[in-house]
Length: 66
Picture 1 (cartoon, rainbow, N blue to C red):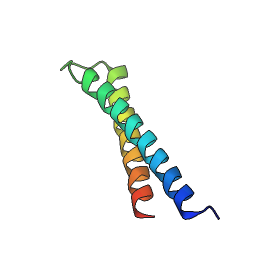
Picture 2: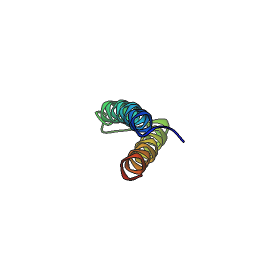
Picture 3: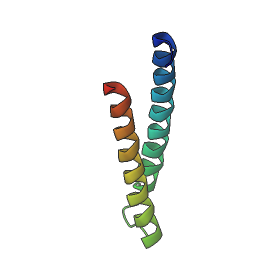
Picture 4: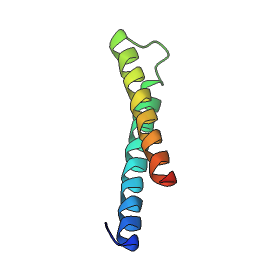
């Protein structure tokens, strides 16, 4: 088991990384949605980005509550 301060630091680093990744997906999604008429490929990308954002949000919540 890691010392408490090391574990806290690790969690903080992980949370920061997840937040940055979530922000990148949000930015890509916002850019994609600037076009009101999405191609089928863009529609799949929209779904993929939303799922990735949700997955990261769940991971961040897990880090915060453990």
